[in-house]
Length: 158
Image 1 (cartoon, helix red, strand yellow):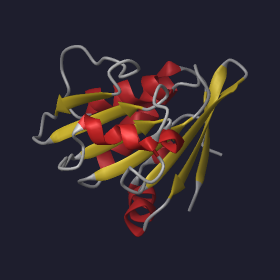
Image 2 (cartoon, one colour):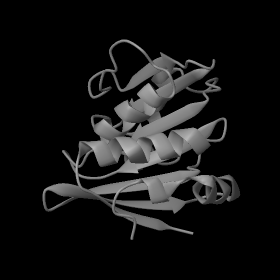
Image 3 (cartoon, helix red, strand yellow):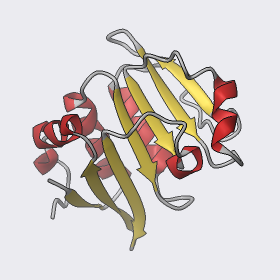
Image 4 (cartoon, helix red, strand yellow):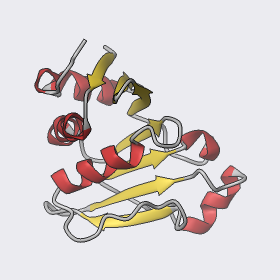
């Protein structure tokens, strides 16, 4: 079951993040796709806030990875792989032993073969004054997760 949504504004993006976070399985791996400015970091920031992250939520554009303690315990990893040249560079980030409650990975194609497989892929694109979002489950857990999401509460479900 894939889902396509029209996100009219930032509030709709935040509602999508909330719907995904509320149904998220432990250890979920999410690949975020989209051009620069498509809303990947906005979605990730809203998702982390929904999971209880307080304080500054920084974009990992220059650090490559940011780690966030979650309100209910555990840790979320937010990766932005735009600046890496080779998937082998990920070994220097200390992710081998990461048992995160959530992996949010921007530009995952740049880490191909060095990342855990995705449960869900979210592709964002500019669409008029808003965004289009395509959600594709990539595992049995991802399919169950997407089925459990209350996407009808996100504006513009198509």
